[in-house]
Image 1 (cartoon, rainbow, N blue to C red):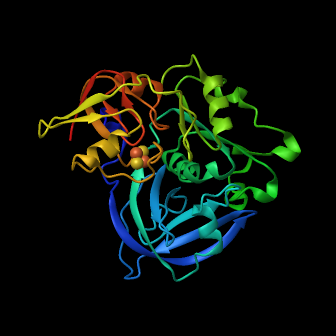
Image 2 (cartoon, helix red, strand yellow):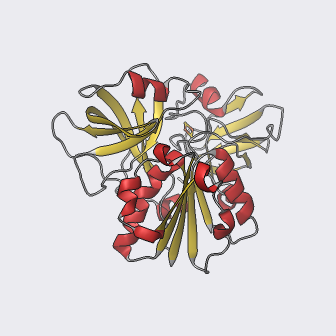
Length: 326
Ligand code: FES
């Protein structure tokens, strides 16, 4: 794990697998269903922090990541909200159409790739279902007495989940349905006093727009979380490279076209993985030497420059050799 993640991730974030039961399923908004998950044995669930997600293993063999959006002080219930994806690859459609109350699902995590760092103030920017990781952050900021504001965009009011929960915060929340007020005005991303951090989650175009708006601002000013992998350029190198495993001294050659993850597995060195798209963070691995070719959707520019960790499900090497902590 990179130093920044060690420093920012609270120590009680647990990574484990448990079997939970769907105890409540309901429609939260047009195309958005909410699930409540509890232990069939009424056991306490691992603690989590704002920004955490869980991996949900579905009965159709798929695994999907969903942000926890319920009450983090309730140790017996996890809540997630699932948008029915227009071009679902089977995950959201299964949850909407097949999963029912009483079903058992395996979950892994919680894991936090999007932790809330201390700041003098926050601007939260949500697009659609991107509201889910931000909801517990608003509550955390409130608890800490830190000023915040939320810009929440969506296609139309009826498709925007949690408006009732957000209403309690009055004019700190700006609800901007696209069919009423157009696209979110991201000028606010740069118009913040020093010490304010911006947290943004939503569809790729919103995150790209927020990133380009924030270009040139100090590192760490804007944090984003993607639910699906962003577009990445071709790999830096088109030739094979070596990955040396520092603990065993074994070297594995990664040919073009194979992922580091698959090459390691082929050599009998499995690395824990889930999304295989550079989105969930499960396969995060420390890099001890060499230059990674980062192809994930998790690290920010500063973390990429530091080059001390990478995600072998998608990332590769820019140098002839990488030495990793495995
Ligand atoms: Fe999800 Fe690598 S398996 S980031």
